[in-house]
Image (tube, rainbow, N blue to C red; front, side):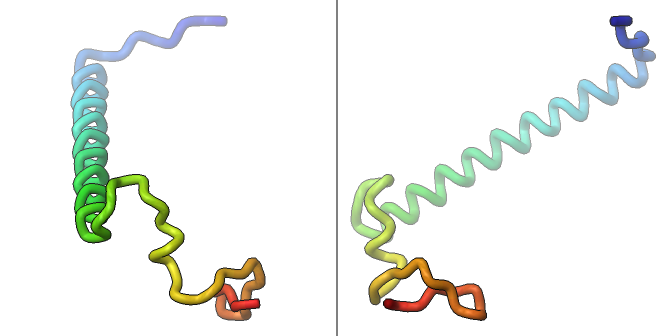
Length: 74
């Protein structure tokens, strides 16, 4: 296998800037998701990772789907 062609200094700088933007976006996204999880846990009155199924529906859950994409009770 041949090696990739050498990048020009301009292309190297563009790639480095793009990588830095992507890394910052990933960090921001992770921080935002953690904040949302904390807020949701605080609002539910329980620790993060508590069973979310109790808050999904007031009625029984079913694997049958209706024509609108939701589920129906058995």
